[in-house]
Amino acid sequence: MKYGKVKEWKKVHIIVDAHTKRVYGVKVTDSKVADTSVLKDLVEPLREFVKRLFADGAYDTEANYWTTSARAGITAWLPLIWYTLLA
Image (tube, rainbow, N blue to C red; front, top):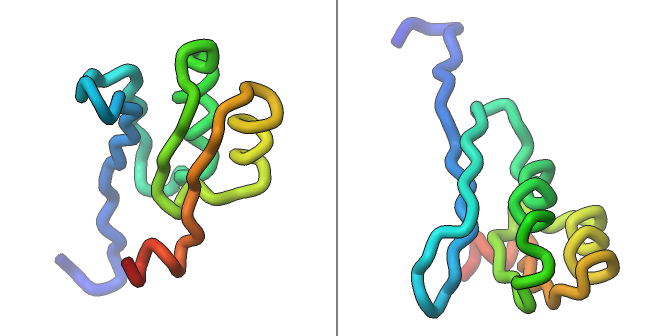
């Protein structure tokens, strides 16, 4: 890699049932897309089926709490980023 060039990568966001291990949603983004903006697209189609949501601290925003708990009635567990890094 030459100096001054930034390497691009892809991120894969997956929504999985913790008990059955069934994949319900996948979204691929490039490295410039914020993780927080992806949660709504993954949860919206499933909101009548999802009761609890566990996500990485990268999804911890007020907008994501609103999308999950207030609008969809989902109990969201989105740990703070610093807690995720320490765990």
